[in-house]
Image (cartoon, rainbow, N blue to C red; front, side, top):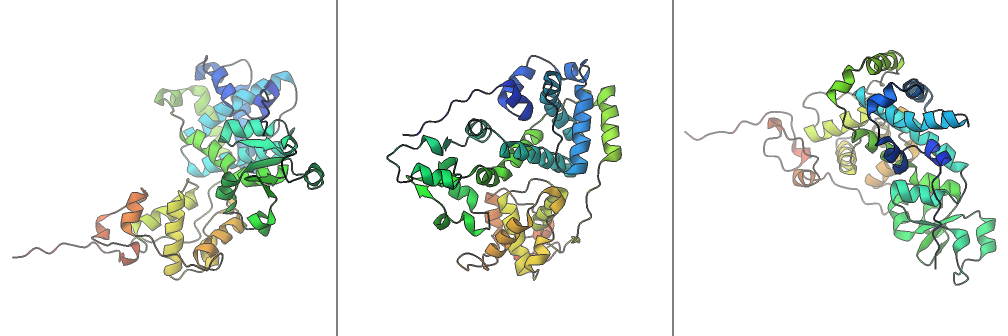
Length: 357
């Protein structure tokens, strides 16, 4: 039997992980203006948090005074609102990446009792600690201690996440498995879930609805101007997409990746299969993913090489059909598409129907 620790989230955890629902509940009794005009420097801290993250690639840690914990806790939701107000996907992605990296750094040093509750709350991942394994397990405690295996995760949860990680250490044959669970160290667990931490923060920003009148607030407008004045500019696209060169769906995937938008797996898969068939090399495709937006080149290389048939079972994947992309909700059909059935048939010229006399 497995015991899931019912760790109670405290004030220290709320300041370190301000995306927890407990913080949202505390904010629900106030309106945004209350935080913008607070006697505490919440708005100033949110601005500094954003600028530091955009410049350094990770958000700052805050000192341990009670006042600073309160400020840090409430400056995070305000900083999300501010970065969303820039309406610049590149900056939004960099901010989300900086915050996710801050969380990663904290989790590496976190009390092991806290981590299962954190991941259960933010990602709905059910973890148990290895020390809670009973004598019925065929994994003994000395082995777990020696290998620093502090956690175990459901096999299906592990497989769905480890598939995109390229190193041999993630292959199931190289893992310790017992009773339908995979054993992990603290660092391995964080590496396994790091992409979801980023996606969770990015999704929270994307889901924000900003009242138009809020953008007229003098304090917020001034803060936005200061941030935009010092914010880094997005890198220039390394591969230029000319009108008509690629079908609209492929062009859209490339544009989204280079702007830092969230691209669904179907869009990345389409782009990769199409470009491989169009003669692009693996390296040229990898080069299209800006590392400044957190794309891990090792993971990207593994995924591209897998699609190209250079990894795994050697299967070279075909370009999905137009009907498949419609079903995946990634179809951006224009008149130039005409009646094509597959993006490979796109020629960039508007097809005019011929009418009989």
